[in-house]
Picture 1 (cartoon, one colour):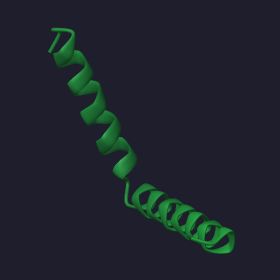
Picture 2 (spheres, one colour):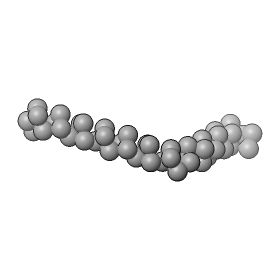
Picture 3 (cartoon, rainbow, N blue to C red):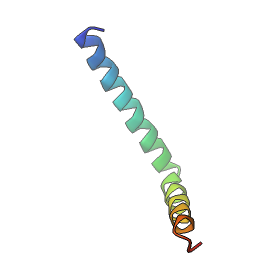
Picture 4 (cartoon, helix red, strand yellow):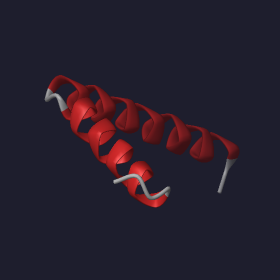
Length: 48
């Protein structure tokens, strides 16, 4: 791949990733993901 193509691919993937993060945040998914992460963590150390 040419340097220009790699650079475009990196920028495109970054833009898409940021767009999905903004979309998920706007839908309120941050709270859902954090809640699941806390539950998994507590189960892993045996408190849940």
